[in-house]
Length: 172
Image 1 (cartoon, rainbow, N blue to C red):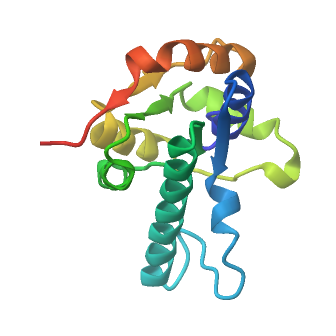
Image 2: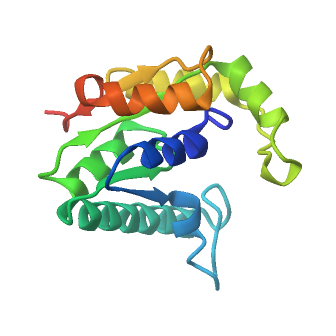
């Protein structure tokens, strides 16, 4: 969810790993300059096409870094099982660890409110998003409640524990 800590934690976790690379989905998405359509923008079919292109590019970068001996960390929104399975397909046969930062709605709202104003994401659908994510992804990877942790503590635990808690496989 907005304010969960994805960008901060992936950056800090990458700094803790000797050979790592961080792929920021927002940066990859902004590579499209002419004709860029926001993920929830219009026309919807073009927005969907660009989300898929971003996902393909993120996975291609992650695969290239993994094959070169780096641990890739992808900072991006995975809203449903269909997208997670798409990532798993594109990254196969490499193992994929999926960590869902889940500090709860109140923590996400608070974190978003205290961000630099140009980084804030005004969002009013937390309850619906949380319910949809739990329904779609509740059995996938590691749902990590970070509400009582600092970003540094969260990153350290992700690095230390994700290998045992976050491995995810395609359905079926």
